[in-house]
Length: 501
Image (tube, rainbow, N blue to C red; front, side, top):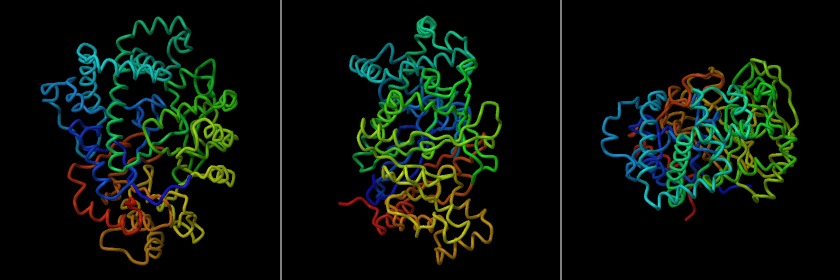
């Protein structure tokens, strides 16, 4: 569905300033919403919000639906009487520009556990009723998730396929016994989800009052070591004997990697999914739409055909394209949930069939300015090729920042950029590309906050196909200056992207 002319900012909540070492849903999140309102932005795009494991990637979560408990604000727990001034008195110093996830976990988990114990013993009747209501309304995913996470801790973080066969294969007797044995841990996991979604819902309500809509992100795949693969192995390509992925997801060689990207997620058993009219997928969309306003589908092309790599391969080179029932799926989604506010991440190896699927349902595709200047005038990422029904980005979370990108271009590419722009301003290349995005005909323009702040490669969020140092960047509390606010607002208004009065 086409959207009105508008703009917004791409920023993951972990990037907020916070004295607890990682961005959370506390006061700084509300201040960021104020920044969006003050600069006439209408969208806040986040990355997937699920709990992350090794590598801290939002795209490799323990759950397709659950929230990341590290985003829970201890200060909001204090406001509820679940933590005290004393509990928050001796917080260690953390890096101001990056998230040290190990140190954050050591500090925040004990605080969350203490809040849980206080809730268990001191919750008011109203709080108890709200908790019970949350558990009942989300039982279709929460029960499996809470047990899965408790089991993971009981097995020192080992993947579910290495657990005892009885519980790995979900034998009813084993589920009951482990459920009783881990009842306290299961309660804790449910409390964390209750509190995450309580805080998130409050923040979303504040954003709505400010005229800001939240764009959520739904990765096409889920992690192998996740509650969904453990509890619904029949809808994934899983080796029944070993529990490992028999066919792994990825992409062939592309802009980011000469050997492709081997993600390791199991691909879907689409035949099984289609038999019950895509029930699992429909529920996934429905759950996410309870907490966001629009949905960006990551790796949209996988709904037309997906790259599948056999178990045992170490790169994505030796894979094959397999047809997916994308048209049938999106028809079922529309029939059951209505026409949805979907945005398609259509980057990579895009065929006419993928474009046909995208256009049939009028999903806006993505245009990336960083990709526009490496060839000739036929490059589809040059703004004069854009349709109105698309989103334009300077770059995404997988790209370098605009300053970092420009500094690393070859002389020829840099000259191509400058020639296209005609001239550059004294404000820096980042503002030149922001201007180019906002002035384009694309209905929506999304700008990473790093580009608004003019930061170099040190602020890059992710470098695909690398395992360390990603997802860590944070902005400083004093970064959103009056000068930045004024410039962004003026540019947004001048190019007709401000909210209509």
